[in-house]
Image (tube, rainbow, N blue to C red):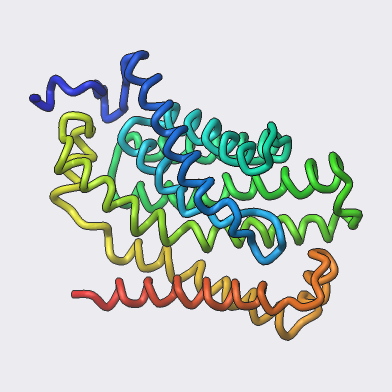
Length: 276
């Protein structure tokens, strides 16, 4: 099929799908994201809630190829399906936190990369994983856990700390997957199914590499911040505050999360910077 006859017409770099195609793409995104999220649904964060979710590469891919709306709606439906399946019922925690967080996050992702470049892709990853995860974490901790089920009877300051910890956990565990795996999916689609890939994504995916400096900084700077927070948790009263907030007898798992996550990001960033 000629690229000019592709299903997703482009105007000024923006993706415009026929409604029937958009519905199919949205359903595919939702189904794949639900399956991928459920596969790791029982791997919690060190806080005891909030799951490990590398499946965010799926809506990131759909946002890049098909635009913001299919990815946003697909991510919102997918996360609700996965969370509800895990809990055996419609899960209100997902409805009030994960659904809006995923919708807003991946809509922003698709909006930023509507005129694609790898620099915009890196920016979209950082913005989405910061804003989307913050919305989800603060809504889940404060609205659902503290107010709705009254499971966290803490001060506003402590609830804020827990929310920030959950945001950081998701950020450092999702960022490597989005920046490393999603580009591989984009390039694979450009090779295997060029007719569905927008022209700017097709050209960048096949003919250019991720900007080394931007990619390295996107990994290294968050990694350094993670290590600093880990040190603060180990050697300052932040550790005691965190343990009390999360009802933990020890913060060793949280400290390891910060150290290992930070070191992983720094290592990836430095290796990238050192490549010729």
